[in-house]
Image 1 (tube, rainbow over the protein chains, first blue to last red):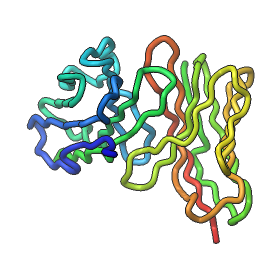
Image 2: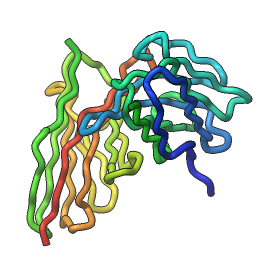
Image 3: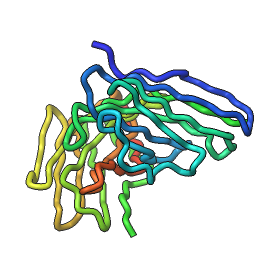
Length: 114
Length: 112
């Protein structure tokens, strides 16, 4: 069956531009997570969705970051006015429900801000 | 402050030996702890989940222990193989928040 997919796989952008990262979760999974992984670092939790709702946005690094999810499926992470410190791998994961379940990760989007 | 720590140095072991990786945490009260494997350029892949009321969990050559008093989980790979070489991440739930907190991972290299 299809796993979690993310697009684009790689994105190079100039400082100050906006970028959109897409995540297609496994069908039927109600929980969706976004993480960021910088080179040689662990995963930094950004945000989670239960259905289309994101009750806690406190993990987003700044107000330049936003995320939405529509139809309980596809999610988009948007970074406005990108900065060089935004360069990282952005990982999406989905799960049948929020708690106590396996997270299935996508391959990630490698973002490089020049 | 809250911390989750894994051995930052790489672990090199000989093929056939048992690899033991450590995950320690401070100021969390997780209901679940998970272990993932991550290969270079790929997303993490789930291996095992252990609940707070479980002491030990096994799956094939893998074993995880969870000591909520010591605030520590140990991850064992028995009869290790070169194909087990990867970075292994532990993750716990930040109870009541639905957030998962990941350690920085331990890189394991199994030498043939």
